[in-house]
Image 1 (cartoon, rainbow, N blue to C red):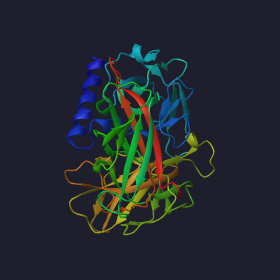
Image 2 (image 1 turned 135 degrees about the horizontal axis):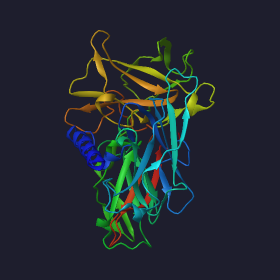
Image 3 (image 1 turned 120 degrees about the horizontal axis):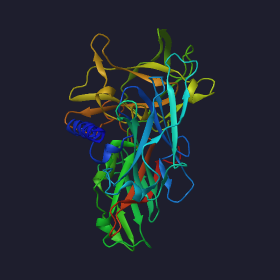
Image 4 (image 1 turned 90 degrees about the vertical axis):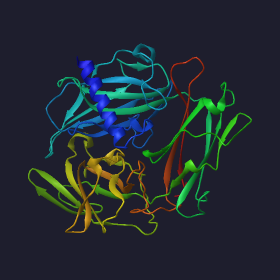
Amino acid sequence: MRKIHLSLILFLIFQLLILNGQWSMVSAQITTPLVSNIKTLQVKLNGEWGEPPVMLYGGSSFIEISFDDLQHSFVRYEYNIIHCNADWTESDLIPSEYMDGFNGQRIEDYIVSMNTTMEYNHYSFRIPNNEVQLKLPGNYRIDIINDDNDDELVAQAFFSILEPHVSIRMEVSGNTDIDTWDSHQQLDFTVNYLGYHVQNPIEDFYPVIMQNRRWDNCVTDIRPTYMRNGELVYTHNKKLIFEGGNEYRRFEILDEYVPTMRVFSMSYHAPYYHATLFDDNRRQRYLFDKDQDGRYWIRNGKNVENDSESDYFYTHFRLVTPPIAGGDIYLNGDLTNGLLTEDNRLTYNTIDHCYEIVKPLKQGSYNYQYLFLYDGETAGSTIPVEGSFYQTENEYWIYIYNRPFGERYDKLVGFQRIIYPQNK
């Protein structure tokens, strides 16, 4: 009965998201909590901040997954590991084919928060570990289960294992096929597969291209422009033209008493602290800043015991502008897991003439931006609020997948990232 119950929940979740037009099939890999008490879900390579969650097959790397549970009382959480195809649907493999060990492993490591107004337990675990080792390259999904509540699915986390068989050369330019040094960036790349046997290179490789870890505007289902000497060349493809956007906005909430970077005021309204940011405005020109391309870094003012002694502040965002017709505005960045969902949509305050949203955020340094989602679209646009400029620094990732002849799963055979422009 539990398996039937869980499958029905998963089916309804994904059907709802697809009907709302928020996730395509490939973007169902967004690492995100699925219940309100789970916060600050992070996936790190070797515990390092900012690294792509891509392990090298056969290497000594590990993936660290952590989250906070605002229930504060101890909960028996378990995790299941699922091997996925290139589009993040479940592969046909059974667990014994892709892992040594068993699903249903208990998350044993947790820390109780100390000296915080919002109490929580901080859980963490690593893959691989003494109980579980992974045997195949490709995509993996981690389902985090509440064993105390009828195997409730509370969060999902995603990562990949790379078995490098191809190399990737990437180039980004502001001189695009739709404008010249104006508002967009065009990505061209070449896949070199010499020494790796494939029957039909044009059909057998499956690229996925991302800008700043965003899945709403990721690019899939593209074909190479031409082949040459063991290479696939992807160039002058309009699907590979991205809005340049603007540099991410930044703020820090480090101290419960002293306003820090871009914080207008700190206040206490029992039982929690509130951080009110300076008002934002629509941008009409490019604004240089050394941002972190949408990431956040958890830390407190003392930078001590950041995981367990950093408090949560209700953080108030205000975008001062007349209402913009034809769509909605969403808070975007890793702080919202990149989800353009109702929880991250700003509402308009007709008295103060501004868009508003309040998010409980753990102390730290944050990047964010405002995306405008036009009615009927699934990819957000920076143009109405942030503007779009060719000189903006952006980070691009390319995944290359292949299903070898006779196999029942997709391998990740190439991965590359580039930051453009590189001289910033």
